[in-house]
Image (cartoon, rainbow, N blue to C red):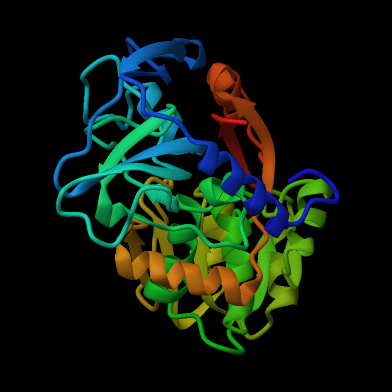
Length: 341
């Protein structure tokens, strides 16, 4: 958000733009691929706007989130829909442009955020997206549209890990492994909202400072030679729960400090997958969208006064550059495509 501009001011400006509005065009700009490949496979296309079906809505997108899962779709490793041109993007925010005949809870002009992984009607790297109304909700007023776009997949994944899988309670010690990324940066804040003592991993001075600024009680570098000794000193009684957002040897060493009866959770896609001992509970999960999930996330955003870190913003034309930045790694927070001014 520009310096000196409040979230309320951003929302007011967005409302003015919405009211000026305009008719939905027959075609739209979209960043899409015609083949699986490296970041430069993403190019600007002109594609038809998909009209919403009876239970769908058409969203005029202001911003879209950019995540590592999008890169896996782009290079083909996670893609199940293989019809080209393929528009990536699993989440975004904007305004309802049209509603289907059976949609009752949303109306034209509503300010919304939405998520649909591998939407068969097209992804969110576009001026418009058509999506099932159950995967859409009113966006929190506290967040600007770029912040809302950045907080859908990541927010739902973080909150469902903290609440739905780990059931983190007041006073517990939680290790968030990989805390400086899009999911981790929000998970730190939700864990603190639940009263946990949060120990976070982050590599480098900037990342450590970043994670501490979000509320982590302790931060250490899991790649350091003495990582286990550092963690043991920080949690001499052991770890109650772990949210693993990255895999590998560093994680496995740290998991040895989870106390008997402790819990470990990780989103599907973390590689290599964590391995549990016989005395811990290990669960994988997907962040899911739906009316109840959006309602819970909205409450958590408000209660935590959520900060949504945006590492960098790119235009729709710069989608390939956004993916190049993803591949460089060490993104503090999340990347965003701003589709409309």
